[in-house]
Image (tube, rainbow, N blue to C red; front, side, top):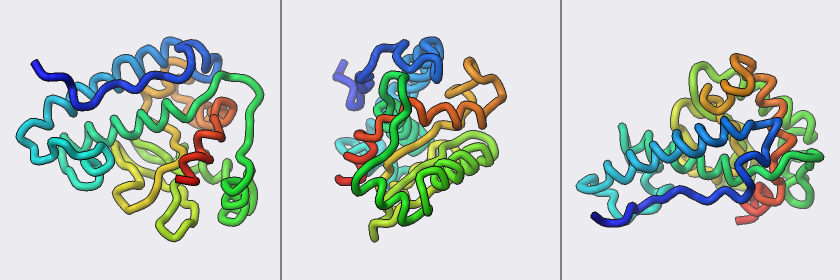
Length: 197
C-alpha cells in the first residue's frame, strides 16, 4: 500500500495547551478525529480524480463535490490549528499587519467586532476568514461548509471555525462566547508571517 499523499500536520503545542479556551477533549476530537477523517477521505478520493500530484490549495481552487469538500476541510483545519499558541495573555497584531487592519477596519477592536459578528451570524456550518486580496486589502468573509478565500484568489490569514464540532463540547450552543474567547490564543506572529508571504 502506498504512503498517503496528505498527512496530519503536527501541532506546535501540547494537546492541553489551549485550555480553557479550547479543551484537551475538543482538540482530541476536532484535530485527532475530524481532521484525520478529512485527510483519509481526501487521500482515498485522489486516485483517478485528475488531481493527483496537485497542491492542496490547487485542489481547493479547482475541484468540486466531495473532493473539494475534503480538500477544503484539510486546508481550513490545517490553517486553523497552526494559528494558535498556548493560552495566556492575549496578544495583538503589530507592524505591517496592524497597519493594514487599522487602514481597512479603523481599529483592531473594530476588526474584532466585525469578525465576531460575521462568525456568529453565519447560518449553519462554515468558517469566518480574514484574507488578503490580490491588491493587498484585508477582507472578512463568511465561507459556508468547506469554503476558503483561495477560491476567490485571496490569501487566507486567520480563521475561526463555526462548525459545531469546533466548540460544542466546551461552549454548547454559545457560539458567540467561543468566538470572543479565541482571541486569547491567536499567535499573531503566525498571522503576520502569512500576511507577508
